Length: 275
Image (spheres, rainbow, N blue to C red):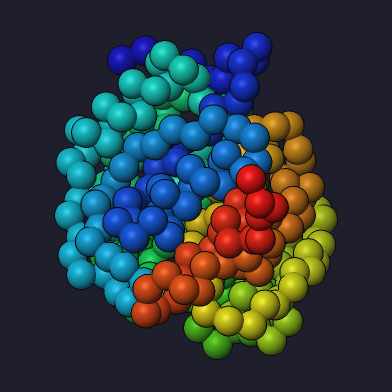
């Protein structure tokens, strides 16, 4: 197969999410598409897995075949073009190999944001243990930016006792990506740490009480990919992505379901003037 095209510069940027589907609409490709729209880019998807889940938990997961994953990526890239890629839930080493194979067909300068999804907020495992090494060896070196939270950064590096986000960022960067954002939602301070080997920067967020955080990580990484597609530097894209994700948590839909409600990038629950 010939190398596929990147973005068509005269059109609105089209950003591709390679991730799983959340039937509850809170995370996964559903969150990604909402974040893309919020940031002003066109969203496309290559679904890696179908989940049966809600706000309480993940009840079932069914993987999409590697051939279908590659076909989805090829179809949109060859016709529409890809300005940036966000990679989320992958699940298995077989899926990772399919994604790596398809990404190799894109033009070399397409930015790739990898959100190393391992465990759902409900505790369900979303990455097979045998896929861990494939994620590190095959996918991370292709990434423009990797966006692990603190537990994910510890899992990637094998440094389970490390608390310093800067130390974790340096260790993740050594695995091959161009830049790292270790997000701070699992720390006492809600501060993301950006590091690209030359520059280290703290990106402050705002903690919001409540239980409407489902999809916050997906929203953050998708917004980051969207801002890269719009021409921002990785650091500025990370700053703007934190603003979008924090606002989405603040506006989260707490009255949906019995578990953590989904974040809301559009302010759907905000009071509206009478028609």
